[in-house]
Length: 452
Image (cartoon, rainbow, N blue to C red; front, side):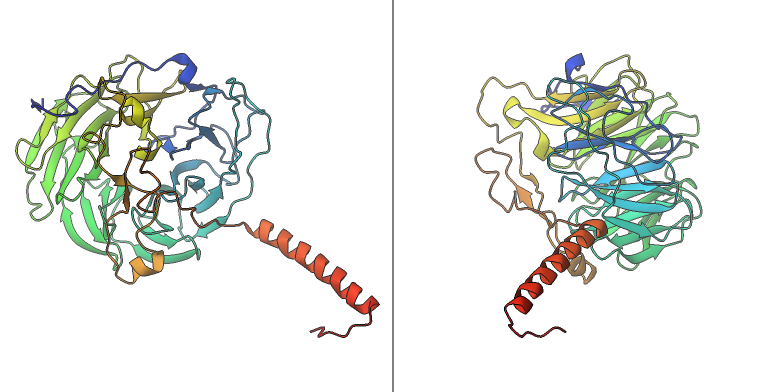
């Protein structure tokens, strides 16, 4: 499997996580499905908790420790179980949650949120129960969500009603609906600029959809012959797409497709005969792929190249006997750059909680290594939802990862903050009280004014 070549990332390694760096104590809601069960921003991560009320635990990367049921503060407000969640790429404190109750809710995590203390012990606090925005439109449970990679406040969601909806969360308006799927959506991903998105369906088809017109532009009718779930990944700006699935003989495989000709794959890579679905974590900056399989202990690493043989093996990846249940990648802006950390995956396990897996390129120098850290996507959107919907097509705004340059290229600008209805109502009441007080002062002084 995979060819070997010289590469800057050839010797990338990941040491087993230490117990003091893990997040433990919670009983997770890992329902059957195609979800990752964990998502992360540069500051926080989120996992759905077992039990009623749609509870989510939001933890801080720098506060590992033990969750205590009934003591550690959580986020909850749905009437059903949480099936997926997603962090806003332009606001590290905004979380979207999708539920069996057919709704999507947007939440704001307070800047001083600290459910676990510096000593690793649970801290008593106030639960987050009030959402910023509720998006209502799907007829059945909402299974998957993805934020737009370049436009502010645009969200895609798929549901068991076999539709994909695009939302402008700032106005709480539905932008478009795609309803040509014949079965349940197993994956949904945006392309590099966010002009199109791809859906992998239970009918074994992968559809490439124009996001604005909600029309199918192209299609892979039979991505993989097996009955297991299919995952899709756009390979940056190369014009290639990666899919993972099972063969007719139930062997796991990875395929590379050319978007200009989808009649047959450019390359098929056989992996093994394990049963768990493969989840590819792709770093578009470095072209490194982290192949994670549900139920696997090991994580394979390889490098993508836009020519045959397409895949090149990197070191041994991460080896473990602890099976993986879910996984996500921490945004590049949240890594320990000066320790040459090129990727960090959060691994969900059955018995050992959430483990951070730090992939590092060995270097002797303590200085910033520009050759392994190309510019990455910043936290500034390239355009607004209205501009994008009007036809604007731009790649992500980028920033340098050099600690001395991170304030340039627009990085670090404060995102627009949403406020809940209750917060606005409270502010209005305070203003009304102040107005009545000032009017009383004017009346007492005998000063006339317009009372309309």
